[in-house]
Image (cartoon, rainbow, N blue to C red; front, side, top):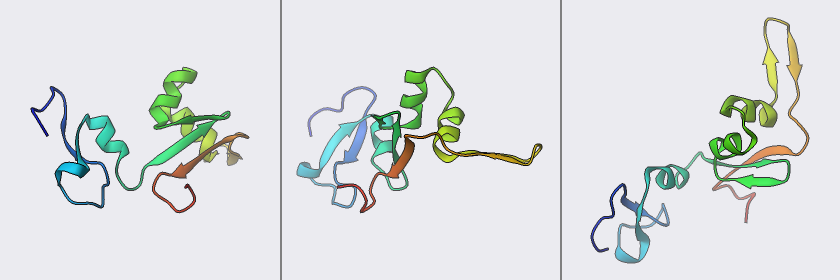
Length: 99
């Protein structure tokens, strides 16, 4: 593996594989967070993003706004539901839906 680069830790490329030389890499915390179960690929206005944070930065909005665009929003004070925006959705990263 060589010497550890600054700001990285050991990570498995195939998260279900073993810790062995062909399946390991030096990765940042962000790379490791993306490479775990329960993460999503975000699609906003035809663009693909690794994280909601990446989308928020590009569009100049908060992560919460991205989540509202994708999931819709229920306002309990007004008892109203705003549906998701067209062309905004997410897919679980390690599901069978994505090949």
